[in-house]
Length: 230
Image (tube, rainbow, N blue to C red; front, side, top):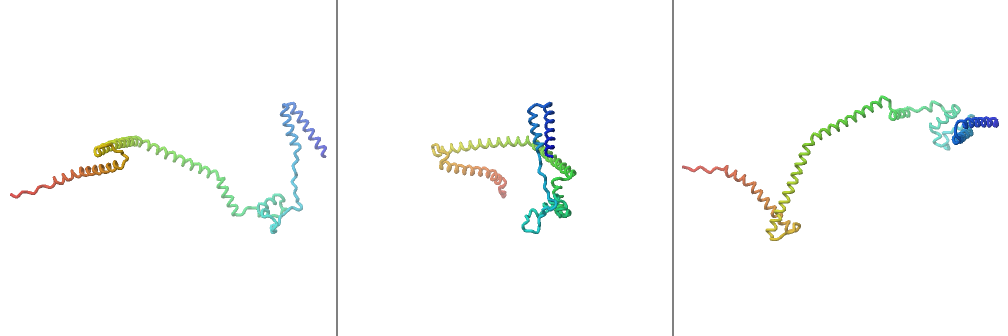
């Protein structure tokens, strides 16, 4: 039997080599020849099943591993030995809780086509609304742009004017302090700072007096002199 099979394989290989030599170059011949030899020599191990005395684990025994007491192993035994495993096929079906869990997982990871369409439509609607809101915001900001630029320029001019006024005021203070002391004073010295504080107090008093003067003039003008008796 073995010799006849070997003769057949040799005949098939020789015919294949003759056909390849007529059609393909030498490099491809060697590759195909090795592949054919590997395929011809493949001999899978047979699945040995003891159908007369199958191994059925005792679930009541403490020596039996826990994984052999599971429903998954029961399904494996029934798929291998069939009714010889002594397992009731009805017990292999999932319970109501497991079935609900399977359905929930299927709905979550593999939703129906209509649900997928609704989600896609909702996503597209949300994306469109965000795009329109962004365009509306950009248009509103562009409409405010001239006023914002004018305000920025005005603030810039005001800050420059304030800086110029501050420089002029500081120069006047330096000149006044120089006149009082008779010599140049370091602006960082305590004498200069004390003098500046005094001058600022005097300026504040002058400003208050200037503000009070119009009010006092109005009050004195409103009070009429008493009538002279004849």
